[in-house]
View 1 (tube, rainbow, N blue to C red):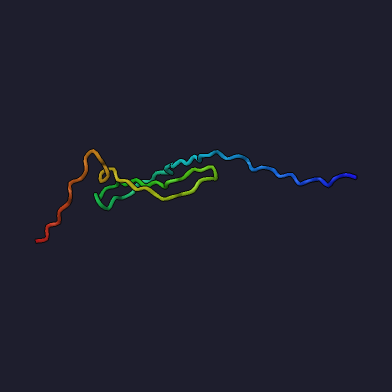
View 2: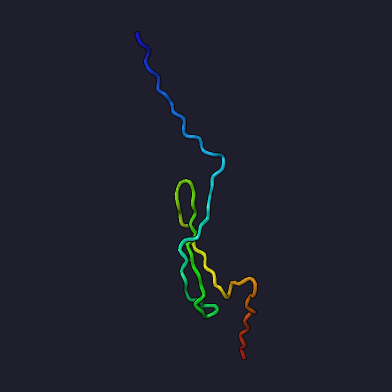
Length: 81
């Protein structure tokens, strides 16, 4: 008499203790900046690369003139009189 075969359990593949996440800028597009009135705005989608796949997590907008850390624009004054 043969014993009934037991069900084998297969272990799930071992995952590393850490997960690699990479933030990557997508295709950069140019545009009009309403603040400085120039064609100097750059916009790119932010892509999150994970072991499970790629997802869009937002967009980043930057202006070459307004957001320049080396020479920031002076504050604007509006004369009301």
